[in-house]
Amino acid sequence: MATRRSFLAGLGAMTSLPAIGWADVGRPAFLAAGKRGSGCVLAGLDAAGRQVFAVPLPARGHAAAAHPTLAEAVAFARRPGQFALVIDCASGAVRHRLTPPAGRQFNGHGAFSLDGSVLMTSEVVAEGSAGRIGMWETAGYTRIGESKTGGIGPHDMKRLPDGRLIVANGGIETDPSDRAKLNIPDMRPNLALLSAEGALLDIAELPPGLRQNSIRHLALLPDGVAFAMQWEGDRSDGVPLLGLWTRGAAPRACNLPQAQALAMKGYAGSIAATADGALIAVTSAPGGVVMICDGAGVPLATHTRADISGVSALGPGFVATDGQGVVWACDAQGLTPLSQGDTLWDNHLVPLG
Image 1: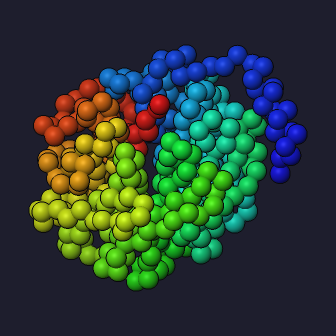
Image 2: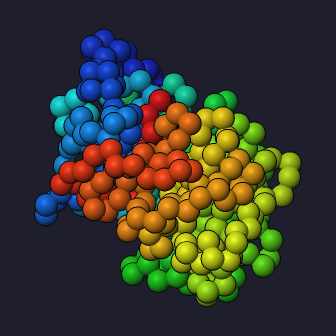
Image 3: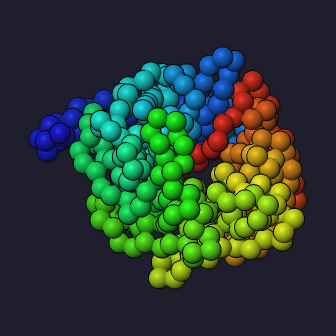
């Protein structure tokens, strides 16, 4: 455990070195994990979909967290995983390899504090899948604490502008050895709001009829959060996979026309929202679709593309990636190819800034 004195000494050493910022590595707009040949990489993409850097990963990645000022990213293993790599995106060097405490697993996502001094990681206790947020100071990436997430199976997490944290507790208990799902009939997914220090402030649960809808990924809205879900019941049920939540109100599932709901095949992967909250995009790689909705969750358009998964907002629209190496501009009118390369993109497209 780091002491306050050692933490401050590390900060002093860090600030005495020249700071390499995102402008020094080509001003990437996004980070994305992918497969290239027989290996895996974390890449930086500019707003036109061009790769500005790529660094190797030891295995398949999931999402990444970008330091708010330094050209430094943390790449997370595909969940549940045992590595999180702190990567210098200027040199490609792995500065630190983080390992969760004994009996824990990383769960694919993380976020930095407002000033970049603390990394927060989504974790589960392997036996029982109870959720934890690990806290690591970033001067030397030493673990300094943890907090409970208020649920089991946490996945995505988003830091609010005031420093608070929203966590998607997926509600699924998994076997730590083979990822078998152990509690589907009794799932209780929720959204949890935590203080910057990790105190539990609020919990919002889905209604009983949707409790088999695992809350997986989040997109911040000006007055709340949009969330993407994955249905653990019969895929032919056509249940809502997009929800909205504002603190003080119950979470609201956004109903879709049956044909559009069925096209998602019970699986919403990535989600993004424009800064003004006017548009929300949700992808389904199994369904091969990306759905564009307005800020109230009303569907405007559904576009088809095999294995489309990553999505992030860019201006009034979106950028999306697929498993065939294509980066797309995306809005309610359609998909427009931006670039194609030899990196086959994985689950997420993480925005910078």
